[in-house]
Length: 291
Length: 146
Image (cartoon, rainbow over all chains, first blue to last red; front, side, top):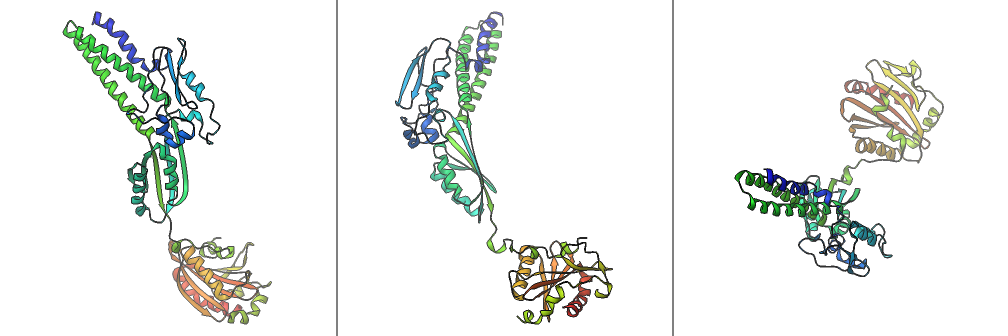
């Protein structure tokens, strides 16, 4: 383990402190919002914001390639990517946030320019009073399909629906019309930083794996080979875990979750009848037998 | 409509008259019960725990006996879960008997008399068997007083 241990140490450190490296000044790429626009808010909205809509790639969060010392930033007004040369030690997030800080004048209320560049997980919940909750389950499923989504779970009286994030508002509006709204909640969780962190940790872990594989080739004895292989297994496991987390996050960002709670409304005929005559309400055995 | 015409004395009777305040005014076996203010014109209780009470209020909005009977019955049954066991037209008004929601051991009887100015109710509540037994006393009381 002696000589090999010396070689392994920096590798392990690089892997273990991958999160810290997420904010390292020498990072040279930034996740420009090339495709997030389309995913999150719909092409029409993106266009209304003056943005260029780019067809989705396999990884909508894929960083824009940049050379050493450069940061690529998407300019929504000019509809193009700018390459900013950064001084060593400068934060990559700064130019992006500065570009994004000024909302365009036509931005709709509540949706700022900054939000356009963020990865946000939208979730909504609706409590509705409806005459026939069971009968609506099929209709909800059909509506989810129309929006490009699906029914994720039915646990009466709740139905969980997943819809493309771009159609989240539209779907919430449509589901709201199914009955009398008792409760309505919407939340948006910004996961841009977590996503960036996961990506960088994954990249670093993959680099470590490549270097460990090279070390394995150089192993002179069984003991060294076993030590490297053990570490290789751990790093591989870490890579799979990170990939899973990234995939789950991408799924949550790309598809919003809407939970519908369908409560049965009482038919008119058995609804408690009330009269605007207080004395009538005071009749009855309860008051008579109260001493 | 008959009651609206036949009850001019109801107005006079309720306007300051006392009910169930003296032992002599109570049905046999009943004693006056402290009313402690409130809207009671009078209350009495039997040794079996059956309570008899008289209340009155203005006939506003002015309704016929049939109107108020229906309102009271619907409020008790469709609004509060009472079940009507019987209904009987008496010379001075209507007597209705109800079972009480979630308390099968209790009975509630209500006599409703209406004239153009006032609505008078005479109520009786208590253990089922005792109320059923005392219903004739209630009928006798309203016949005597209204």
